[in-house]
Length: 220
Image (cartoon, rainbow, N blue to C red; front, top):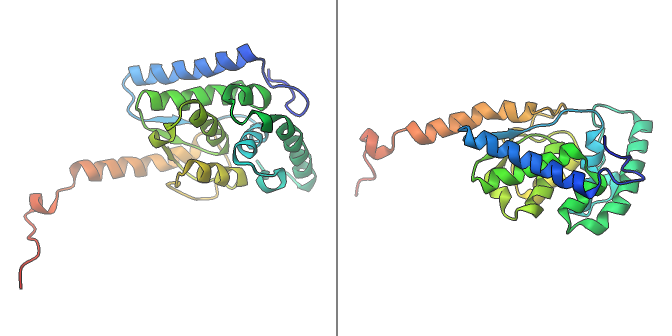
């Protein structure tokens, strides 16, 4: 299990590296099995706190501007979450240029594995569809691990979390859909997937004007 990131590191160095490598192996296994598109999603409660710390550190944003309501916490819960992000961010900011250090300090095994997965998808030149704020936090770290990896990624959607909007802006990604989702678990990417398939079908199958015998401009 991960440590309390408000007061201690989430992982030790060896655990962080092992989690990243586990994510890389999963990406390799999927690509080797024939996958031509990968989707990253998350499951869990409370993981938006760690994700928000990573995003705040990498976008140089203050806690009050980046902390959202997660699954619908009240004002008291939001204040506690903001305090936890503030405390974690105090330790994380000095590690902006150290991706493994960031994951070790304020990430967790799930975020580290997702970062490895996102980075390896790009290394294997395989498009990756990102889900919500947790995946986008891992992607921000992955882009530090594998510079330029973002060119192989597409944002499936934009969630209600302020940190998600910040992460997508930092990555230069425009979401396919913006439906105010707050579930995670790959749902936003799954909603966007049929649109991706439709776009591919149009590009691959739609006739050009020449193919369809449509005449071009005529001279006056």
